[in-house]
Length: 91
Image 1 (cartoon, rainbow, N blue to C red):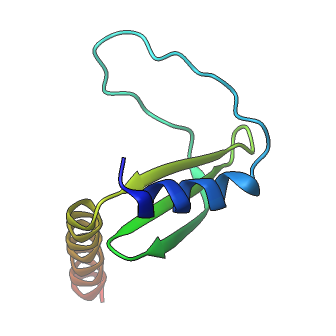
Image 2: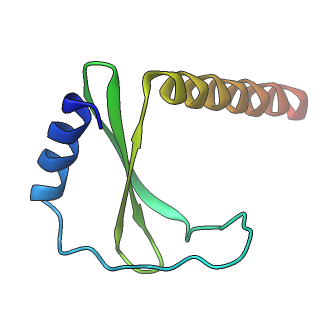
């Protein structure tokens, strides 16, 4: 594991409550409860996406590489453009 990723994960986990082990069975895809709060912590080419679920109040943390972060940005940008286009059509 990259040293930057280890340091970032250690930093974010220091603030965390003890993790709850969750076993996912089956082929997936797996759906998480809706998220109420989202944050991204970055260092160098790595970041941790942090989601707080509404259903359980648990924090979910997922490390992302620069490539995954860029893919997420492009996906969200596409969603925002689609929403804006749909809103214009309604007006």
